[in-house]
Length: 171
Image 1: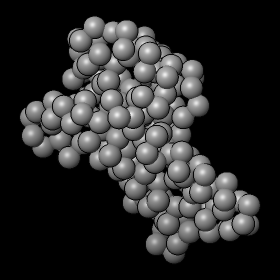
Image 2 (image 1 turned 180 degrees about the vertical axis):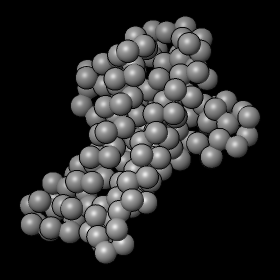
Image 3 (image 1 turned 135 degrees about the vertical axis):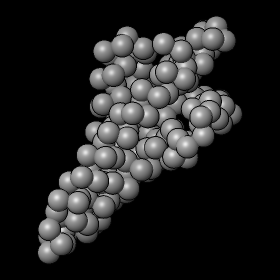
């Protein structure tokens, strides 16, 4: 698989999560306010994985994957240096393989570094403060992100494309 095919496969996983959640939301009764709120939060996280993680702008342009990867290639060096094990593996690759590596991990690395770890910290703070509303929201947010990360990792394992790269380091 080339970088574009890898990107599109991961995009499809995030879109599937988004669409499944949207369907559950549509089937939820209007009077189920708490459940609807939870589903809106979850849906927002799947949307964030698409927009921020994959830099997907709706996939309307035929070259949206190329544009997204080009954009992420600019950000990757600033983030990857924070993770010595991942950075070392990346630096050892040739140019073509680097593009596959970026396609396979960039969305998750970005989401873990820029979003997930902050939510995890906020969740611990909410628990310490016994903030039920904060706990409710942050558990949904972190759970949705973890669901996407797990699906992406399962795909990487199935395809043999950089599986377990995130097991090496705490992100």
